Image (tube, rainbow, N blue to C red):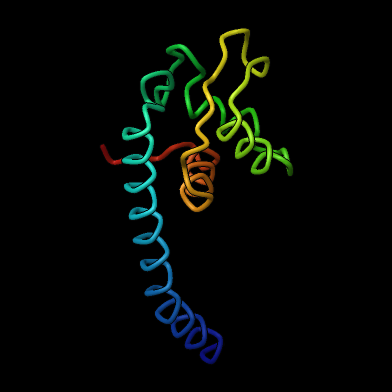
Length: 117
């Protein structure tokens, strides 16, 4: 029993820095994604938690939470724009964004658009 207890303590202390580093990375990515959303006028139509012109980003996360094709679908929706997923109001295309920026935005949205702002 003592060995098991020591092993658990070691594991917890060894894993703690990893948890903090992952949390710090998510926070940095969240901050960057939020800034991208602001810079590219996403937040003019999408609030974090409510519908403006388009759905709230948290509603998008809920709708696609269990959809394995959500990442590809949302990346294409951002790049090409379109309508029909949430109503008839069209979303403009955002083809000027890099693939890395679109991936960051989609990942952030699918996590529920967390933001400390």
